[in-house]
Length: 209
Picture 1: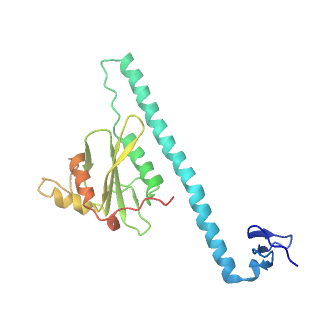
Picture 2: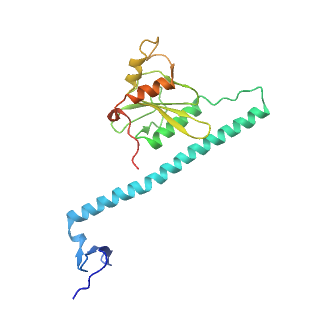
Picture 3: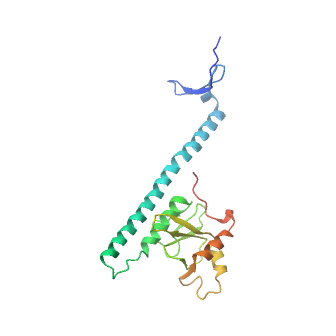
């Protein structure tokens, strides 16, 4: 008589096959069932994909946060030593920080070579413009398929300001002279309100996990 077991389980032997022991202690070869084996593999793929990704993203986010803290700590020291100088954080550094946030947290692939009006694209090939700032406004020039904007903070945190089609920003500010042709600045509070009107289906997806 085959003894009952407390809980069913999977087991592997030296023949490199996977076996299942049911509650009655009866052995079944999972590897001999192609459909079942495919489902088991799919479950494992989904599990370990979500298991590993958060650790990577948490590490990336921690690196960005600590780097921002270090940058402002250094700026504070410089300002104390040279009070006549401002030592502002702007330009390429801020843009690069915004781009790594976009690439690590959103479904965006950055271009390996810098381009004039776009920083990357979605898996569907739609072009993305990424902007970041420590101030109270974000800049906007050419109208991209997607516009992704962030507010950065000295304590290492950051906030999504706008996520959606660039055309929405264009329509809101089309009365402004030079819109879509010259670099203009728009207030964060207005961009946040605009972003709130964008349907989830029209936003760049965050990475799973």
